Amino acid sequence: MFCGVDEAGRGSVMGPLVVGAVYVEDDTELMELGVRDSKKLTPKRREAMYDRILDIADGYSIVTVSADEIDLRRERESLNDIELAMFVDATGRYPVLRVYADCPDVNEMSFQSALTARLGGTDVIARHKADDTYPVVSAASIIAKVTRDRLIADISKEFGENIGSGYPSDKVTTGFIEKWIKENGRSPPYTRNSWETVRAIKSRLSVRKLTDW
Image (cartoon, rainbow, N blue to C red; front, top):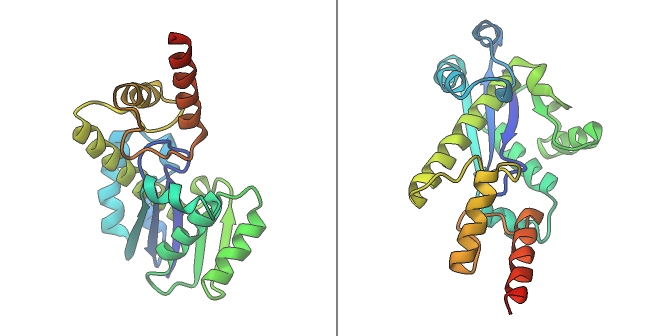
């Protein structure tokens, strides 16, 4: 058996980081299903594929790390270190002959060596855009993305309004964070305060407060 692993929400300023792993003996059915990089599929298509992937897979795992935990761990670890630990957790659930990973590090060989060592010498192939190359990684990408999208939808429901995708490039998300800070004097729950996006918003609002005088 072999597995593929990928993440969703790495650069998000709100919500968790999610890592998904899919285990298969053979990826033929995944190829026939037409799995591909989750970012290239519509939300509706991803949702439909999610259930089929779970039917096809011999096993799967999902690992999440909250925004608060990311902030806490980033005081002593890099985001790559956090993600490496999550990859180890997700891919170590079942014995496999090989792990295919979508590499989050600029240095593929460095991340591949680190993951190999942490998995006790298991054969690892870590490549950029692996979710576009290996069907089992594409499947893992879809599992991670759908899981994270559902969690973000739950957070929106909790707030009673749309928080957007959670990414810094989403004006709905940054607008929500800015409004919340103005009204409450602090960042909303589920926000990664260690992100420069949040620091910039707080700095901008602080300058505005001073000029109000």
